[in-house]
Length: 416
Image 1: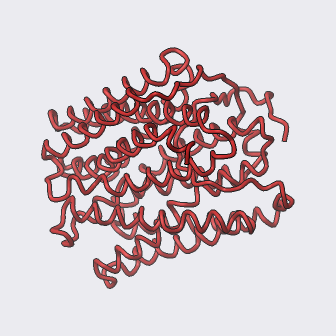
Image 2: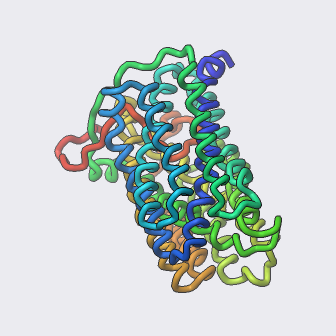
Image 3: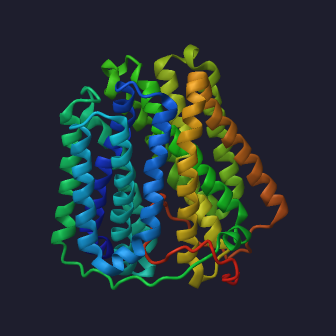
């Protein structure tokens, strides 16, 4: 527990930050819909946010080396808070798109600042436990965030003030912590081709995690806004989001521990198959399930779909030399961010073309395909020998600051 107390200020900062993140994840699509924006355009703006996040992950090492952890976090939090307030000052979808790109970049900088700090401050023997607390707290905050705007119109300026309030409060524990900030990060590179050859199942899984989950979380608030539960509107969307994240939270630990004992890819396959069937169930039988039934099945979707990213990362680490783990983590983040750009676009067009059937049907089909890919990869390549598999710890797709990915140089490989 001493190790956790030493970095408690950083964990609290991220929890406050993720309250704002969860809140914005509901406000942005609902606000755009209230402006009369088409679903495919909403998906495109979500993709632009992911592109900003991807750019932030790419440039964060240099920014950290230049400004340091505290100053970079403070500047990024201030910019993101100002962006949240500005959304309520000018209701224009083009302006919102620009703001979301900047916010994606700033969120990447903030996560990078904190996670590089944690990596330096926490000893190896306690890292799994501390990171477990860190990521569990982050998921809880993502669930809580939308309820601060429950009952408000998605264009009510008070909703955006709530987001700005939490983004500003996240500055306090970081700026006042006594924990010494780490030295500027070093830089190394891994080509994407080498990353795929090292752990193809992990790369495919992480990419589809970005496609499926980012697309779904960007647009399900619009689908559930029309429900009557809780009075409808933002309250209904918050309940739905909480159900999905609660499913992921409940399954994350047992699935991870199970994957420490069994072939991880088979565990991922089962999770994806169950989650895919849940999504297809909503697509086909949504009207007959009733509102409560749909929310319960959405929780089943979240249990698998919002949890398998960490297992994909653990599978990649199982096959990675110790010295190359930071490179692999950075590379997988880059792949996830690429999928997150594509996902909202595909989901937006699917929802535009077929409504609920398109949104949940696309996710369900992709998840079932991913389950089959995982089973196929097991038949192509055996699991690591006993003793070579790393212990699992819960991981969210947030950036690490210790490395920089360079996909342009295929000759610079990491020995497997």
